[in-house]
Length: 128
Image (cartoon, rainbow, N blue to C red):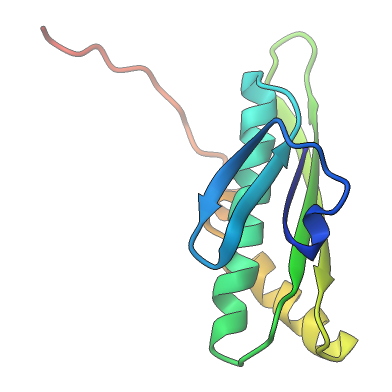
């Protein structure tokens, strides 16, 4: 899965585009539509969004962000075994500043935190 914004959308033929508060052209999403792909998309979009959010207060200018997310799944149970992501940031800020921003994002990004916590997912029957 790949999600990208701004200058990092170049050359990406997205499956769809999601509106985004901090970018004029939204977030391009490239990848499949299975549940596994959507889980990876959720992680990647969350990380991308949080890069923009966390860059606001220190005033780090971002020209574009790309997040690639990959995952492993148990072929018997289809449970998620791993999710890894990589972030490419286009910014004039020094690399040390960008590295600090990405470390902060890794701590606060909500969906990766939820998944890391091994959330139980249950189906509840709604009463009609």
